Image 1 (tube, one colour):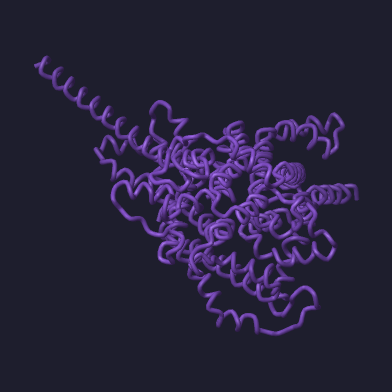
Image 2 (cartoon, one colour):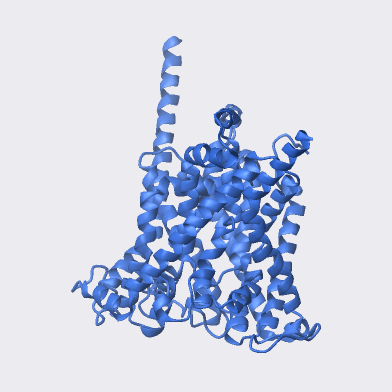
Length: 292
Length: 295
């Protein structure tokens, strides 16, 4: 009797083991299939960028180019002043980022920790502006900047970042500040700190992870921005990477190896940032869903 | 007296902290929204002062076949790409939530395309859709299928955009994944004891628990899909098959210098987005499940 029970238990156990094994096999198959689909376009991009223009239109396409033409990168980078485009994008994205992080934190701290009249109503307005697409206000803002002579300068792309940044960043930082215990701030106040000093010396250093998320998101967003530079920048030496790449496409309609080489170079900074700060990226995306 | 002073000081301090946002909101949101409303009733090329023309712009819009075409293109795109992205994102999130070795690498790979949006990826997809030697058609040719002229045939332009959008569902996927990781384990444990199948568990536990996240991803997804611009600018499409709303708005404003007409378009867009968002939120009690608010 006892023996019989044991064998049936064994059987159930081995069936369960088989089931988890099959489950794992299925999961891995799906993961590899998905991973393949997501990566293939990147391989295709790299492969194209290294091809001689004579074999680009060859059928079937070569995955490993013969010959490998590293010179495509040199050619692409020298045909248009990409070093300028990179410098411009870097200036715009960094200066914007500093503004969005610092003023965003300031505003968020006000909403999280200070008491003032009308705070809740104002915060609801912050959330409401999250829903308003910037495209709606694009034309009057353009006219405003054009009337003060800021067209074809970096200013319209940078200065608005110094007004609290995006509503989403304010929301995110506020959530973080709310988690800082008030006791720390009270202690600092007894030591004679004023509110700004508490913000600067206590709250900011404690919020480094949240500030990092905002910094990365801000930089990434500005780096990938296309519509803004397209509207405001006219002369080529002021172009950002995105704008330069679009112009490059106009110059080399079907020179796919050069276009792909330039595209890869344009993607490198974003990829680099992603791989360096992957943890923060993922944290930020998760936080954006908390409201749901 | 000193109490009143204290309150005053507190208020002042609070407003000082949020003053950048207040200024920014007035300068870059509230002011421009009103200005845009006024401009939409004018005929303005920016070189001369604006003429008030009443409802002319809106009347012209209603008769502009390109405007209707851009609405149709944008709506059709959103109608297909948003639900497909949600389903794809959720399925991928469930897959990435399995506990197997090496999952971190797969999560990175699945998310990667969402990081690289912009001109470079739009260019990449133009090349992938190339009729003769693009990645898709040359693969199809290997199994004996003669692929379509993706971006040259008006019938295939929108399917191309939808396929491209599916490649980048990473953000929705990550939000779903975070929510899946937070789901209470007891629910599944008791369902297991009752012998519920995987499908039943999905339908009766996972989906209701995730419905607030679906709501969030749905609204964000629709707004993002309606705003699509960079891809439309770079890739275009046969005839007007790739004439998205924002592209046509941009053309009117910055190529034809018709600021009044473009502002009217911006307002129509604003009202459409608002109406869709409100409609979805109003309908949400029917299908969104909130803990503790049982119907």
